[in-house]
Image (cartoon, rainbow, N blue to C red; front, side, top):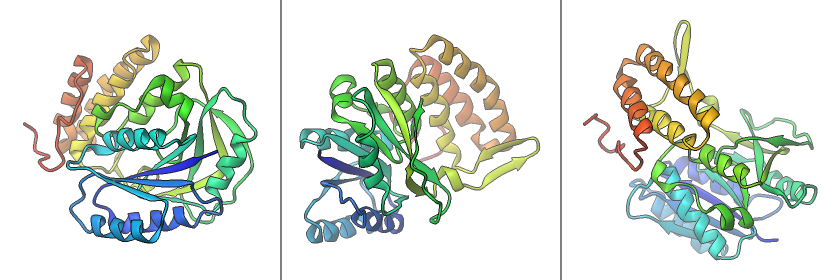
Length: 284
């Protein structure tokens, strides 16, 4: 069984160095390691050149433009499957897998049925959590420790590259389940993740929201609505929630208000693509 690790990176070379070290230190080494660089402007390119020269199974794909996590995962996943991967274990550049994380994924695959198409690692806040060998059914996953089989990709296609950031993993999870694949979470495969799970939050009683750049709020609203477009019940619930939540965002972070409102409107219209560019986060 060929297991490929896929990492997407953008301008976080310090985190990437830790991530690469974690991947290359796995007790079950990946058969192939693909890193997609979203046109980083820091020293990422130089670091990855050095890594690819020293580690024989590392493949670097440098993009000419920042296509976001969605575009990076879509391109990287296609490369992995085209190169014969049976399973692809995907994550962001700030994910730090425990040494036995991939070995536990392989253990879980030996225990589950053929109808399981996605296996998820468990995200934790610290580097010293105690793993427990337990496999439970899951409904959605995030592209941090997201293991997907080649049979899923060949049946349902690639993640939606036009989401840019956010909700691409949610949409892909729904699509996989809709096509008859089960998802499970492997509690012994641990990944320390420093992004969403550990972010500071903006508090203005009684509301709280993650502390992220205001422009990113646009994609949270737009993409989540787009992701649930084909599910009548879930889609209706999501639209109702975000109809109210845009006002909450405006209260918690006034700078995010126009992004929340426009993201809601563009989601209803089904608009996709890199509508808000992080290089120019001012609303147009």
